Length: 150
Image (cartoon, rainbow, N blue to C red; front, side, top):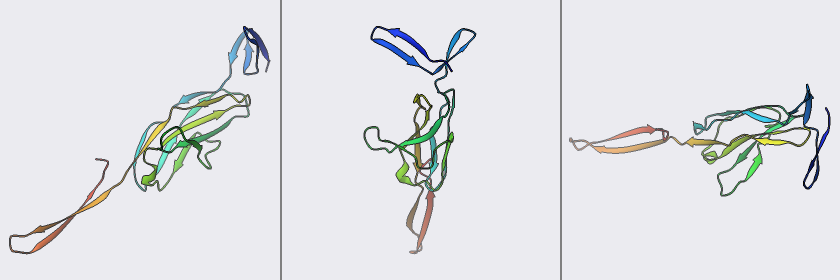
């Protein structure tokens, strides 16, 4: 790996994020190659987000971040999500509805790239119950399971 310096109007910039191949400088900064997709699940279900990257100077660190759906950007690292390009969680609760997830890649040069955020929608199924009066004066109860996802 060669270190290159270039003159700029404000000074010099040194970069070790380049290699020379046949006289051509190639940037080896990491880049996201697969963006995670938005996901819709039912409460109690499982989520799986997948992303991918290329490039970067080893060692490479990857992890996932979540932004709870409060105002502003509140990105925090998902515990246990390091060094994998997929994120899975089971028994997801309604409180996760509206959360956004993104994949983060950091290389040895501290070059950091983020995937586009993926939105999680958590549907909460519910039961409805009706009491119907019969013509004979009796009553009957009818219950129905409704999936809020449509």
